[in-house]
Image (cartoon, rainbow over all chains, first blue to last red):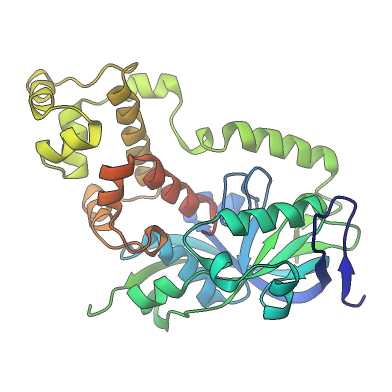
Length: 199
Length: 150
């Protein structure tokens, strides 16, 4: 399958450029108490979704942890981390400037404090029947305030540099088609904590 | 390799059921029921101490006078459930319940309340609690439980 413009029956205004997203590992985490629902999409509003189910994941572990530290900050939190292999036929990639121009949005608009623009794009992608969106992670403030993340995995203690940018995958499970899949390949428990500037 | 989400396991009917359940119980799933709330209803002073707020600050959070908070403390009581401050009180209890699910003791929760949060544009959760009420704080904890990004 090659990259192509997809207008969909109900796509509005500018079409999304969609492409397959296959064979890539994604990372996701939930509070350990919710480990049984690690791959359950959420209906509560997120940056890219409001009023429909979406599953949020990242293309790297560091970005996934930065997304968590964004909320939990200095707290040492017990997480269950999952790694999954993804195959989705129709995904719009908004990480490239050209793709953002196509749908007339800016990086600042997508990653800013106001979710309105991102939620509108998410709703358009959902209504257009896409299975997912590749989006820039809004983690710059995390790297600025919490430049290091400590991860404790059994006896191992890692200090990771908090990334200031990265890519997330937002999956719309309702729109997964024949051949689309998300398979868990690994899961583990760990304790994660952000380290504040100067600490 | 375990199939978690695929077309075989995620039929349209299953998605509909999941969506209905999730939309009606998204918050309730993690929070105590009305009956549990009645059984575990706490008094204002206990909850204030759990948050580590002064009576003055607690009065501002609930939108009441400090003398009202002092009276509740003396009577070991709290606001009426039907009042505006009573509804805020229920939300504050919900936040405590969620923190408990996340295994946060009061000390750790207070430290979190007083650390700048990138999800709140660098502001302190305690300040947000004061200015906007408990809902944004509750949502942050629910995000953590569910793995939602912001």
